[in-house]
Image (cartoon, one colour):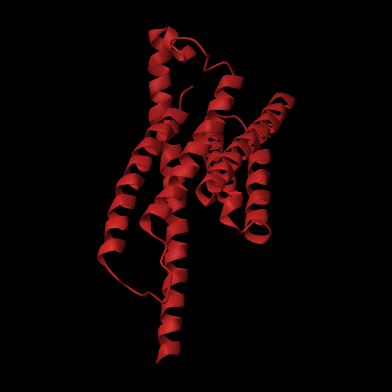
Length: 94
Length: 132
């Protein structure tokens, strides 16, 4: 479920980046690429799980909670970078 | 166990390479007074995409490993380092899963760069035709 939630988050942020938040100041590129990178990495984890006889997706409640936490912390990291970039841009323009 | 460390090491190398390329590109821009009609994405920007994918992915995987208790906030930080057998298992996982992760992310980045290059080449040939 963590993989699915991260993939969905990557898709949503990519759509928002290409449609609404195209301006570089929003830094949506970072959010999308971060989720995309994690999705690819967990896909490899899934492939190795299949090779070991387990399922590609882990649909347990524990993994769902982890997925929510991961997406939230990804958003939090993006928010921090967004604020830092905004403050820097204001300082340069001032 | 610690598969995200491989991506982290690659992220450090890519970030360093990006800095070097950025400096070279700045020198080139200063040396050449060039008017380009078509925009080409600089290599430093492309390396920036890879760096964001690797750092971001590694950060989210670090959270997953902390969730599973494989990474702890005290020495030696990785629970697999507590015994020799676990350490060997961890190194094996890094060599297989970790390297595969880094290779897949880099290959995907390569595809993105290829798509961008094809699009820019098409735009360049279109604008040349318009000029003629």
